Length: 235
Ligand SMILES: [Zn+2]
Image 1: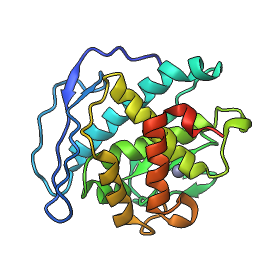
Image 2: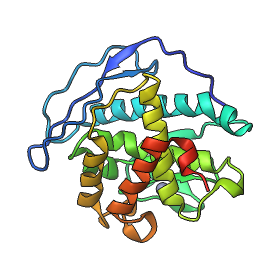
Image 3: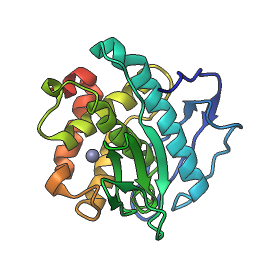
Image 4: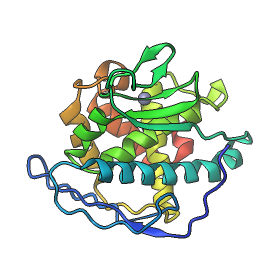
C-alpha cells in the first residue's frame, strides 16, 4: 500500500497543440505532485509529445489519480485501498513487454493486470493519443487505475460493461482531482477526448469498439463520471 503523498509542490504541465488535427485547448495548468524533483518547463507546440514529456504527464496522472482514490476509496466503500503497482510505460521490444496471465502485451494497448495488480501503458498507444493532446495520458492512466479500483469493489457494484465503468470512474477521479485542486483542466476536455477516441476508434486494442464501446458510448460514460462522480458509475 502506498503512503499518501503530501502535496507540497506545484508543477506546470505541458500544453500540446496539434497542427494536424485540432486546436487542442486542453491545458493542464498545474498538477500538485511530489514525484518529480524539479519544476517542469513548458514544452511548447510540439506536434508530437516527446518521451520525456510523456513520462511527466503520465507521472502527474498517476500522482493525481492515486491521490484521489487514496483519499476517497475507504471513506466511500469502507474497504481498504491498495494502489496498483505502476509498471508504467513500456515498449514491445522483444523481451521487454510486460507479461500478464502468461501473455506479453502489445505496445498499442494499456492494461490493468489483475494477476499482478499492476497497471501499464504501451508507448505506441500513448504516443498516438498524444498526437492529439496531452489529456490522453491522463485519461489512459485514470482508466487503467479505475480497473484496479473496481477489482477491489464488491461484485454488486461492478457493472457488466466494465470498460465503460472504467471510463466513468476515470472521469470521476480526474474531475474529483480537479475539484480538490490537485489537477486543473480547461473546459472542453471531454469533447477533445471524444475526438481522440474517434480518431483511434478500432485502431488499437485499447480503442476497439467491440469491447470498449464506441466513441459515443465512451464519452457518455466519461461525462456521467464527470458530472455525477464515483456514485454515478456504480451498478
Ligand atoms: Zn479498460
